[in-house]
Each structure stands twice: as structure tokens, then as C-alpha cells.
Image (cartoon, rainbow, N blue to C red; front, side, top):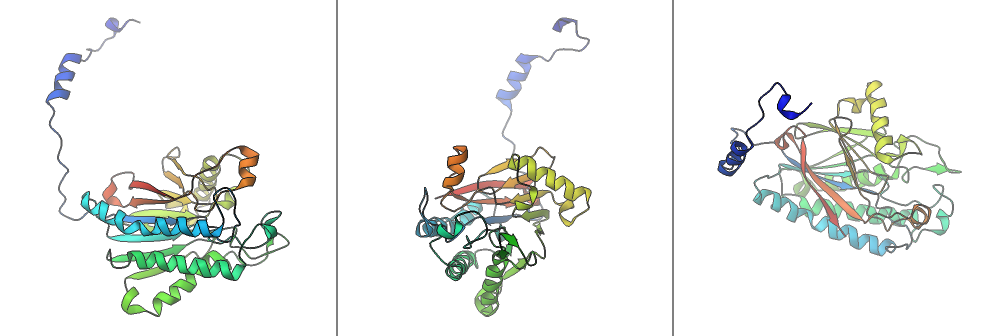
Length: 311
């Protein structure tokens, strides 16, 4: 059927062009109350103790992490100047903060440059540095964590104890004890640890789920695996069923997907990369720390101001 035979009036393109030319910029709506916004900083896959690969070993990883953490205050000020101030900052550990020393993949014993105690010591210092960088810049600071697979206590390659008996939770718990012992400085900081594999937080009015991501299965594209896993959690009425946003680590590269009608975000890693993965697939992902704004002040999606602090 030709266009002129359709039974509706065709738009006047000339009139629409004039409308575009004459339209005045819309001013941002004024709200009687301050929109709720928080800055979420994702501490993902540091794998401290992994020996030198394409991007170096632990010393180079430390440099990347410190550089990214030191940029958080500038990001907070930048958002304030842009008219989108945040009322709180969430530092969320997504797991695999340490490499561990054995039991996670063949040859791991020969691919570490620090023992477990040394790895945990560095992780504590870095997390405390992150808190010190931002404490007092906003009314509230929240330190949170979920367990990853490299944090598991394993025997013969298998986890043999509870899900929460995990170094990724233990190291944040240790930092929390340091903060609690110094209330004059850290009174505005609270800590939340997962009581299972996942954690759901109300962040500035938006329910957000966090998980490491390793429970989604071994094969398939990460986005498809995590979204299918999330659907299963919804069908099973698990705690993360009501989350509007799911954020994970584990897969070491950035993904943002809205194919499910909700938002799935995969955070990049800060480790030195994986020569094994590059040899097998030809792929590699640049290191970086993901930060994003979350809250009702970001409209129907509930998030915005996404930024990767590249190292």
C-alpha cells in the first residue's frame, strides 16, 4: 500500500521542522524536596596476590586501586557542581578481593606473589584508605560486602564450610571493627555484610541487589547467565526478587543490560588480567573501578552518572 492511500493524515514535516527550531530548552523541574541520590563505588575482583601477568602483579594492582580510590572525592565534588549532589556513598565489595593461594584453579600455587595473611593485610589497608578518602564528604558512608569464590575456604578444590566463612566478608568485618573502635572519626560510617550469597540494599529509595556472580553457572554469555539466574531467584521468591538493579563482579569486564526490564550491571575488575583467558579467547578487558549514581532522583531507571575510573 502506498503512503497516500493510508487512512490517516500524514504529519506536516515542514511544521515539525519549525517546531524543532523554535522550541525553547526545558528547565529542570524544581522539587519541593531534595531528590535522593547516592554514589555507589564498586570494589570488585582485586585478587590481591596474583603474580605478574599482562598488567603486572600485586604492586601494579595496588597502584591501580589507590589511583581509582583517590578519585572518588573529586567525583563527589563533580556531581555536586553538576547539580546532582549525593547524600551518601556506598563502598560495596563484590568479592574476590584476594587471590587466595590454592584450590581455585590448576597452577594457582605457583601463580601468587603473596601468602594469604599478606593478601588480607593489604586488602584491609586499601578498604580503610577508601573509607578515609570519603568520610565526612557526605552525611553517610556505607561499607558493604558479598562473598566471592576466591574468598572461599577450600579443601581439595571444594568449599568445605559455610558460604559466609569467606575472606571477602572477613576482611570487611575486620575493617568494621577498626571503624567501630574509632567512633569520633567514623561515626557516620556503617557496615553491612551479606548473611548469604547475596545482599539487597535500599539505596536512596531504589532496591539494589549485589552478588559476586559465580553462582550463575559455568557456560554461556555472562549477561544471559546472570539474567536467567536472576529470573530463577524471582520465581523462587528469593530476597533479590524485588530488586530493580542487580550488580555483580566475577566476570572482570563491564556489562550493562536492560533486556529483562530491569537493570543488570557487571563491574570491571582491578586485577592484572588473566593470561589463561586471553590465550583461550583472545580477549582482555582493561582494569577499572565502576562508580554510579543510584536513587529516586535519577528518574524511572533509578541510576545514572555511570563512570569507570580507568587505571
